[in-house]
Length: 126
Length: 126
DNA sequence: ACTTTTTGCTAAAAACGTCAAGCGCGCTAA
DNA sequence: TTAGCGCGCTTGACGTTTTTAGCAAAAAGT
Image (cartoon, rainbow over all chains, first blue to last red; front, side, top):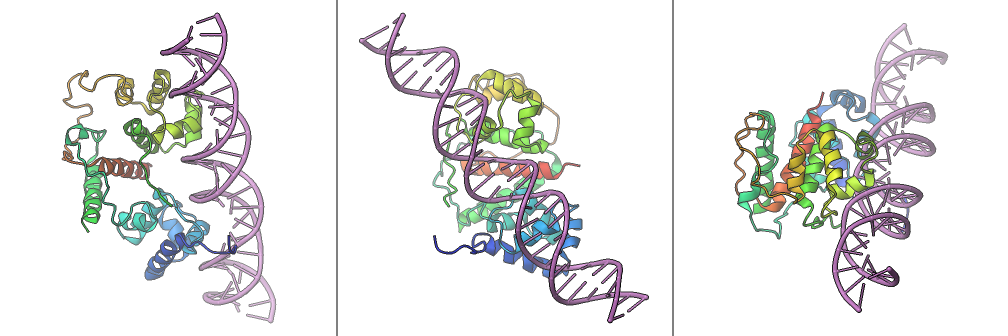
């Protein structure tokens, strides 16, 4: 269909956002690579910023989010992992069986989880 | 498009749990396959995690339980083999600060939370 | 000027997760 | 029994992500 070198399109929004974040800090690609502890290579980050990757893995997004100091969920949203107004058709609650594997949480994990939950629910309101 | 996730239905709870367990260890599908001694193929594990398998065989669950170092009965329970209340005291498995107020989660919220937890845990490694 | 280093970037290969197709085994019905 | 269906499970792909190795141009020394 149509042409060929139609860059990203999907990852374009994410890419531009990432690029703006980086230039906001003045860091180079390799400096960001180091800042993530080699979690994200400079080459890969370049592909990311230019929209060549549609859906980077959440791990990558998490690393970048902490480097740029933006909420992880924001990057997740731009990458299309969570729909901005994902009020699930499935409004049914099943409160009782929520005794999930959310035992064995560290304090930090619990904190981050609740933070993330509030984000999700805030989204759902809209 | 359409990252709609209404798959499985039955194996959904088990699948998400398995997925969170795996990314908790940072292993890949093929690495888990090797870890089980080729007991569980990577493709099958993928189907498992995505809820495409209603009732995996107990020996598969047993292999995975030993790889992930979780009680075998727990996986059996999630797979629907044994009733949830047929377990010993729920007092404290690991004594962590685990109080989590997730009484009224929707199914989708619960799913997203567990996924997010996976990422957090994988990130926290090393 | 001429090196040397650093920057952003890219092509190719590797690794990843998942899908499609099929095999095998237990079931159920006649 | 035998024929068929259903479903767990494997194998072999396919498309995407991520790594590796390096490129040309700009920057910085000398």
